[in-house]
Picture 1 (tube, one colour):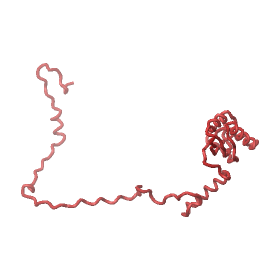
Picture 2: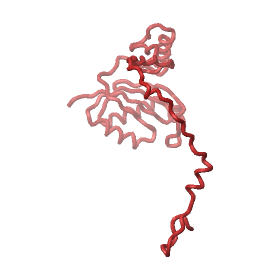
Picture 3: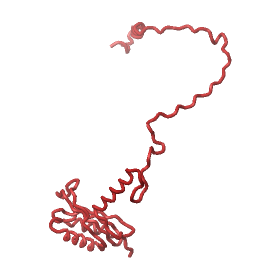
Picture 4: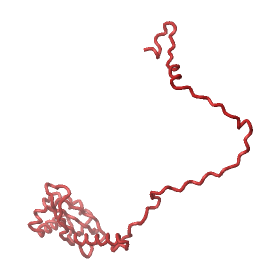
Length: 200
């Protein structure tokens, strides 16, 4: 049987955490063991107000854990969590290995703040990763007008003859008021052909 490693985040009921966080950690451990897994490491990660109520609960406590189990563990754990009244939600992510230390929420926030300060002052980031690109992305518009296209080369033409340079006579268009009645002229039907389109 191949062993898989997981990082698990469990959101638990806040009222139970106020009473005893050790009880919640034991409860999560028992759920994992019922599903066929083993808790390698666990810690209380953070206590937060939820974005929306879950089962009528507005505050929750997060527990971060690292687990080892077989490949069918995920489905079994979901079934156990669904039956539990203390665990509101859980999230499992498959990992390659279990880290040596669990980073608490405060440590994570401090690390992220230090990394963002390192990139804002122009220096290299303090944790791994490349700094954000400076300047526009390749092919992006920069707000300046594009250079004008080069003009087409002029070609020489033959000199104009008299017929080409003869003055043109101008014709004036008829005013709109004169042409309108001509278009509205009705023709009388001849015989008993019946009404035409113009008659109504």
